[in-house]
Image 1: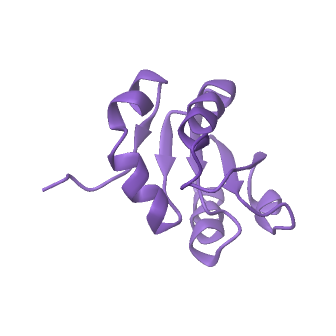
Image 2: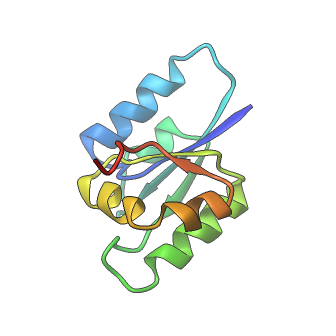
Length: 106
């Protein structure tokens, strides 16, 4: 079973990604994250985590702990700020056991 985290899961892009993954024939465990507790996201994932804002000082520590807690293998950004933050911290994310789905820096 593949374990995938999708950020921004309360927004149309984030829960759209989760909905698409749910339709996959693959065996997946989906973790949705959002800064909003009042969210549609829990309906589209196996686990929901309320996230701190990406620009908060403790965000990276929270993300790495969440990756480890759920044994996440891949991160899919559902919001733009996460894409940039994750690109700056690929080694730390990989050390936690996950691969962020990102373009190459070039």
